[in-house]
Length: 215
Image (spheres, rainbow, N blue to C red):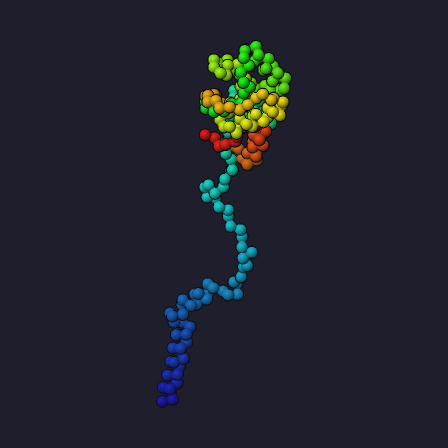
């Protein structure tokens, strides 16, 4: 009996050892214990993380450039306007657009009675520094009047009149006069924010002109 008891004890010990250390149920935990080693784990603060790569989505950045046009000018005024743009060194980015526009207002000196009188008045105006003028030869109430500019808006015409007043012209006035005239617009392509600011500064020096997006 004592021998049988010892055999049973040994059998229980052997079974326990097999089930604890050699059984199939421990294969997976043992493997995980080998894969995860707590002593080798390191906590990383958010500030220690490497910077993420910048986004490269199409259209995520903007050049801020645009096509702008400045005008409008008569054919006689255009060369001086182009000269004002020369310091910008625009090169191929500068082009011209011509269009016939309806002018509803003009600045003028009333009819002088004869061509000779109109020519004398024009000479007086040039002595005051007024270069942009035109003697009206058409039949009608304005024959031998002197045109000092035609404009789309009354505001632009009034601005021209104010400039003439500062030059000493006293007999000019603003009136309604619908006529179609050829006009010039200067277009500037690929204008970034800095160039746009410089264009607007130049435009402010030319009464009655405007800066707008290209048509």
